[in-house]
Amino acid sequence: MEKIINQEGLSVQVGQDVIIKAISVAILKTAGVSRLPDKKSIKLDKLKEENVYTAEVHIVVNYGVNIPAVAWDVQRTVKNDASDMLGITLKAIDIHVDGIDFPEGETTDEQN
Image 1 (cartoon, rainbow, N blue to C red):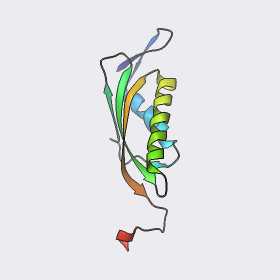
Image 2 (image 1 turned 60 degrees about the horizontal axis):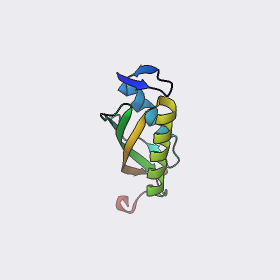
Image 3 (image 1 turned 30 degrees about the vertical axis):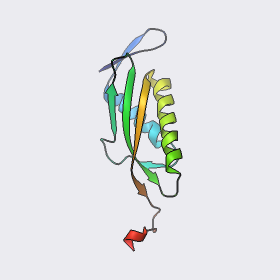
Image 4 (image 1 turned 180 degrees about the horizontal axis):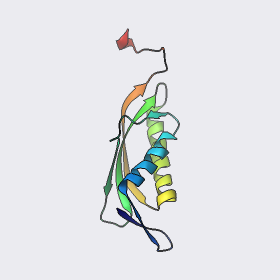
C-alpha cells in the first residue's frame, strides 16, 4: 500500500494497483490512443520523496495520428489526473509506442 498525503495533511493508504488503474483510465481517454498492449503496460516506481513517482507507459496508437503529439497528450493527461485524483506527482512519464492499430479492412504495405 502506498501512503498518499493530500494538501490538508490527511493521509490515505492506496494500493499501487489503484494508482496504475487511474493512470490507465487517463491514458485510454487520450485522443489517438487505441489501447494498452497488455496488463503490464504501466510500470510505476516510487521515488524517495513523498508522493513522487515515475511511470513507464506502453501504448498502441490509432493509424494516422501524430505520434509525438499523442505521446505529449498522454503525458499531460496522466500527470494532471494523477495529481487531481490521487494527489501524487509524476516526476517523469516515459511513453513507448508499441504499435499502430489500423482501421478494419486496411492493411499495411508489408501485409500485401
